[in-house]
Length: 513
Image 1 (cartoon, one colour):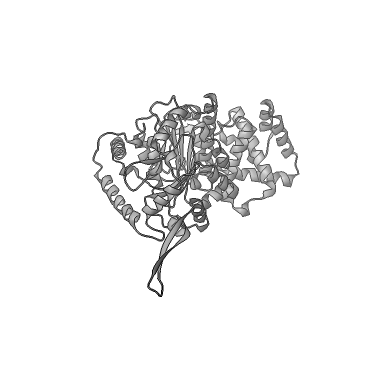
Image 2 (cartoon, rainbow, N blue to C red; image 1 turned 60 degrees about the horizontal axis):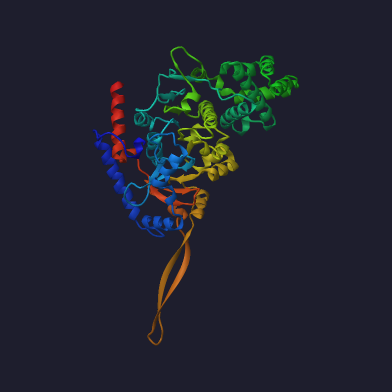
C-alpha cells in the first residue's frame, strides 16, 4: 500500500502544514455552502451523483480490480487518488491501474500538490514525472525515499545550477527500426517547429528533412554512435557514412533514400539539409548532449531496468528554443518503448504498473504519438496522467484532431478549474447533463379558491459560469464508465500521515545538504 493511501510514520514538526490545511479547509467549506445560480456546490454534487453515479471507481472495487490486474504486485493499492468524494471524510475517487488520464488545470490550482506528489507516493513500482520548475521535486523525492534509486535529468540546470550531469542516457536506445526512428525524428521536428514558427518552415521540404533526420538517427543507433554524430552528418552534407551503416544493417530502403537525397539538385538538396539541421538543432547544445554521452563516474540510466524497478525518474526542462523539450521527450519515448517491451514479455501487462505523471506537459513535452499511446497504454499497465494548463496547450502540441483523440481516449478526464475557455467549458457542461428544475406558482380565483401549479424547466447541472468559477480545492471528474462528479482535491500537506512522512524526508534532505 502506498504512502498516500494512509500509511506513514508518526507526526513530526509539521505544524505549518496543518495550519495551511485548516485554512484551505475553511476556505473550500465556505465555497461548498455558498449559494450560486442553480444552487450550492453541495446540491450540484448531489445532482451529479444522481445523473452520473461513480460507485464503480471507489476504493473497494478499485482494490479488487488491482489484485486481478496485477496478482504478482504485493501491496499494490487501489489506484491513484484524484480527490475525495462528498463534503466530508476520506472516501476517494481513484484512477485505476489500467487507465490513463488527461487534466486541465489553470495555474496555481494545486495540481502538483494534490495529484503529482500524491501519485508519487501511491505508485507501486517505477514512477516518472516531468516538470519545468522546482515545485514538487523535493516532495516527490522525499515521498519515495524508501524506494529504489532517484534519477534526475536536468540538462538545463533548473534544479541544480552547477549543471554537472548526475546521470547519462542513451538518447536513442528506443530506436531499433525505421518506425521508432521516425517517431523520434517526429519529436525533434515538433520541438523545433515551435521555435521556428511559420516563417521558419517550408512545408515542401519538411517531409524530406524529417526523413533525412530519421535515417541518420537510425544509422547512429545501429552503429552505436553518439548523438553529436547525427548533427555532423547533416551539417556536412556528406551521407556516405550513414548510408553505408544502414546498408550494412539491412536497411536498404533508407540507404537508398539517402543516396537519392545526395543526388538531388543543389538547391533542393540544400533546402532538405537546412530543414533537417533545424529539426536536429537541439543536438547543437553541448550542455544537453553531455547528458546523453557516457562519462566515467556518472551513472548510466537503463530504461529497460527502470520500468521493472521501483526507481524514480524526474525530467526537468524549459522549452528554450525547443531543445530541452526534444531531449526530455526523447527520454520519455525511450522509457515508454522499454515499458511496452517489458509488458509484452510479461503476457501483455507490466508485472507492476509504471506511473508517469507528465506535469507541465504543454510546456515540457513534444510527443506527437501521445494520443495514439493513450488508446492502449492503460491495458499494458502504463498509467499516464498528462497535465495541461489549458486546452489550447493540448491543441498546440497535438493539433485539434490529436487533442480530441487524447481527450476521448483518456479513461479519466479532470478539470481543476481556473480556465476561461468558454468552448472548452461548454463541452464539459454538455456532457455533465441537465436536471429538472421545478418551480411552484400560486393563483387565486375570483371566488377565493387557490390553486398551485408546478413548472419544470431543464437546466445545466454545471453551467459554464459555475465551471469557470470552480472553487479552489475542487475538480470536475468524468470517467469512461459514465460517472462524473466534483471531488475535493487534497494536497499532500492536508493528509496527516503523508504530510508527516514527506516532512521527515525533507528534513533529512536538509541535513544531508
